[in-house]
Length: 179
Ligand code: GDP
Ligand code: MG
Image 1 (spheres, rainbow, N blue to C red):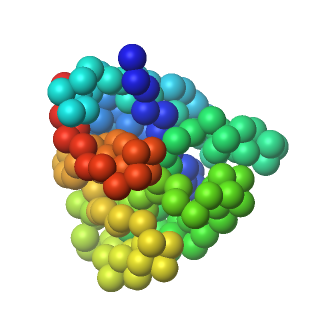
Image 2: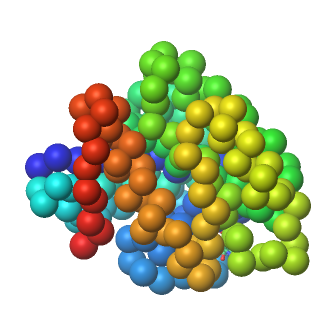
């Protein structure tokens, strides 16, 4: 069965685990262990074919860059997350994107830039325009999510699957359904 291997990167506390668990299990975790790093699987349908999406929720505590590089080598699509309420986390995404580009060495790597915690409007430190601007420079899609409110969570994973599919089969679209 076709597997779509997706990796989440982003600094600690931006909500990588909350986004993953909300997608896979449909619930919001208030206090997830920040050191937990795990692989989750969920059934999906792509163009009516049963497939599996495999999500690697990294902990960002990779002591060795070689660990991170291994994740990049094995991954097909990358979700790079910052918190809209944390400007530093937005700055941190630069390094992650450049590591992916360096290791994949392909121009077209499926990447999505994500501003999570968009429910925290009053604590916002990064505007949607700033997120969009960076995504335009990278030439990747941009999306704001809320793991808490389950806003744009399925949409995010559907989009990354479509990106992976498109980049594998040069230009052909696909229809992805989350089961
Ligand atoms: P990680 O280190 O990137 O995996 O971050 P976590 O998923 O552990 O989340 C860190 C904290 O932010 C936890 O207390 C979560 O409950 C909270 N959190 C995650 N996503 C959201 C969100 O969309 N909105 C709000 N308000 N809090 C969130
Ligand atoms: Mg986590």
